[in-house]
Amino acid sequence: MDVLVTGATGRLGRRLVPRLSEAGHSVRRMSRRGTGPGGVRGDLATGFDLAHALAGAEVVVHAASDPRGNPWEVDVAGTRRLVEAVDRDRLRHLVHVSIVGIDRIPLDYYRAKYAAEQVLLASRLPVTLVRVTQFHEFADELLETARRGPLLPVPMGWRVSPVDVDDAAAHLVSLASAEPAGGVVEFGGPEEHSVGDLARAWAAVRAPSARVLSTPVPGRLGAAMRDGAAVPGRGARGSVTWAQYLAGTPLPA
Image (cartoon, rainbow, N blue to C red):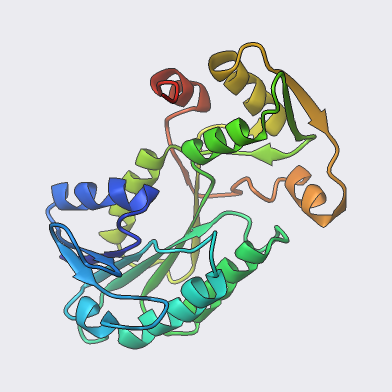
């Protein structure tokens, strides 16, 4: 099939594009500049060249997001622009990459992602909304950022189920080739951890001298994370564990 991937240069997109090609699909990578092999230009923030980029696409994997910028402009308004620009005569499936817990975790970015889901559900397009847990690499980066010398402070009682990004990419390829679910499906890692246990396993590999310090986090965010809002309640799971990821990933240079 003719597949267009938004967010193709991101952490997930870089793994996803070659897997789609290996599965026999013709893949175009949409970005604002449209550079590189298979690159096409399209800007979700402005709508520039979106119709041209989407022309003829039978499957769209919508993985673009802007967590550090303005998600309401890119994720929400950009998804609305995407809906308006798709070739409805050709489109067979739109797979949207979302996050487990966006309907329960009180963060502004998550609210924007949830609003983007509502845009797609109201569009009457053949959609599958795939809520994925946080990637191992993201958890790795967060723990490195949180470390303060010999101390590694982490939230007490928070529950997570991180997933390998390659597992997520492989699952998205299988979903893209299947019939649209018409709603939300979930995908997470093979194990559930407390953030404290996750941090202790990380410290044993990355920073053996660091001591993990679990601290309470009050408020609605802390309550949601302790209640398992970031853990999938159903759906498929990846196979690569946190320990396997740590063992197979070299220390940063």
